[in-house]
Each structure stands twice: as structure tokens, then as C-alpha cells.
Length: 103
Image (cartoon, rainbow, N blue to C red; front, top):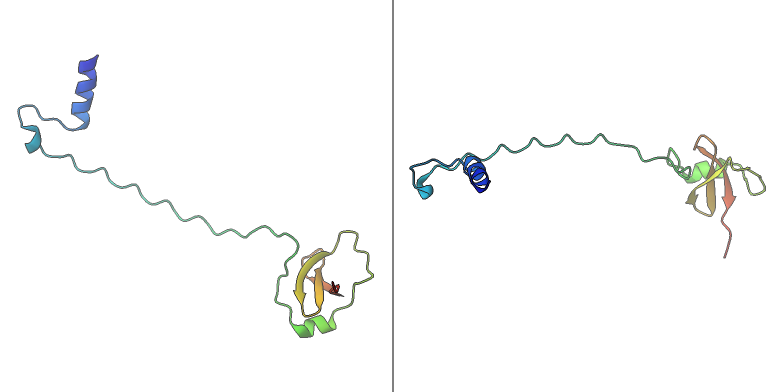
């Protein structure tokens, strides 16, 4: 059993009988594995609080006020611009504005 293990080790290291171990050729290194392909870029899942385009101050001026609007969960809070909080509709596009509450 020990001899079997020794023979396996000799085979793994390319042992050459009758040649001094220090003078035996070393086996070539195993080829390096090919690099893994880069993962495809993924789009982070939408959390409903982001907008699809950059809103400008002029866009905010033209938006309707939704301070007293009951959205029943259809509107989601978006970005804050100036003195307003922008709310996004079900399609994640800016829908209306609400003045920021003063603390």
C-alpha cells in the first residue's frame, strides 16, 4: 500500500529511474486556465424612486402640485430638486411635485 502511494508520487513528479533526482528535468508547468469571460453588464433593478431623465428646474416649474393628491401607492418618491420633491408615476416618469416640508 505504501509502495502504491510512492509510485503515484513518482509518477506525479515525473520520476526517472537511474537519474539523480537533482539532474532530472522538471515537468513543464500546467497551462494557465483561460480567463473567465467578463460577466454581461446588468441593469440594477428599479426601486421605483428613480427617474429616467434628468429633470431641470424648468420642468419642475411646469409640473402640477400633488400635495393633496391621494396616490393609493401609484406614485413613488423620486429626487429632490430645489424646494420640491418629485413623485414618479407607475411608469417611473416624473408625474408631479410636492413642496418639501420644513423641519
